[in-house]
Image (tube, rainbow, N blue to C red; front, side, top):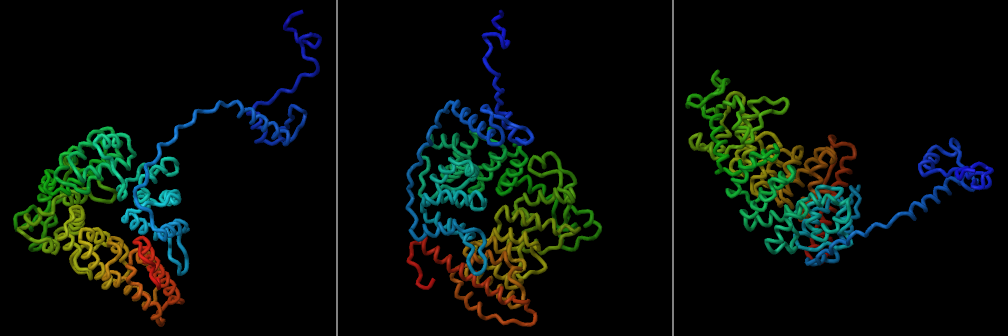
Length: 559
């Protein structure tokens, strides 16, 4: 008899019937997906149906887990350095919990607590307070959902907040958010520490380190950046280059000139923009020469004239434009983009880039000592006025030239001259001192009302000065008396809640009960305005309480 004989008569064959084949894990999954009605299942003990399938799956699961070899434990994170900043006052600590627990817009007369969190963070950070450890997770969650909060949250959270964010993938945005180091937070002390942080730190830490070193020694900061520049990703090179804006000076010119040859188009464009801010640079001189060839006095003064001007469009004293007729390799090297966006003419596109990169000082000399106000008031031949003024606006903003900004802004009440586009006016205002900016916007409100005020108000320093705050409240009152509805000015109302000085609360309180309806008033408009004014008043009082809590002052008796 063969040893491999497994017939029933063989002594080597098992006695009794053969056991049913045991299904593998994939068979169990397939049966569970199809259902035991469509694919019947019988277990090893003869039981059948859904219960038997679940029993078998439970048994298999235990077997699979029991066979796993435990993995090596991950190393514990390096402990966070001790907090050196003072703790929040108790009242401010409770207020932070209230603000973090707010859930969006609150209707009726209740303030929107979520919108008050940014200014609370700014003031707490300015005082140098440490965040309560129990609120750090909620702070990081708030910053994850709102990108506008991230710099303020991370500045306030400090080293401990960044350490905590490293332990949770949902807070990975911390790696890419650049913030200034918190007040009283210690920085690396030696050059070796700085070089190690530059080579191994998070992107946000590296940007903060670069800013810190640059404030003390600009040449060393550029040397530090140069050690890794060629290996950085394009998006990182762009952000590092942008971090050079504060303190930009002649010491940066050589580095920026080299960046004009960068392999990334965006980096090249930013390098050209920064170089144009250095009005004494070789780059600015090259752009000035191109600009002088494009813009000049009228044809009678011997300047090159545009075809339209030659045909008789140039009045006496008019500015004549001869836009570039080609974009050569030298212009492209200096950041002039050759291909215009859809719907834009090539010559106008090249002309705008050349003029806005030229130093504004060139025009006084080029036009015989004419002031910016005189040049802005001059007619421009050939229909080029809008293009020329728009380029001058961009140059004034980029170079931070207050005199040109005033000329291009014109009167807040409007007029023949000055920048007419609201977006241009909002950008030009940034070049003016804060007090002058607020006074100009207050004049604009008095002359034009609230219909176009949102962009202009957004650029004013907060809290608004008394003159501007009173102008906003008066304009709201005029809009109410005109019979309109408050939601037409919801953007301005939101700004007022955040930016109006709490000292304006008594003036606002006088207006609440002074409304009288007339025939042009919309249905129930007075009730809506009353609710809006009550909410604004409640918000101002709450902001006053928040300020006192952070300043460590006793609560006001009637707040």
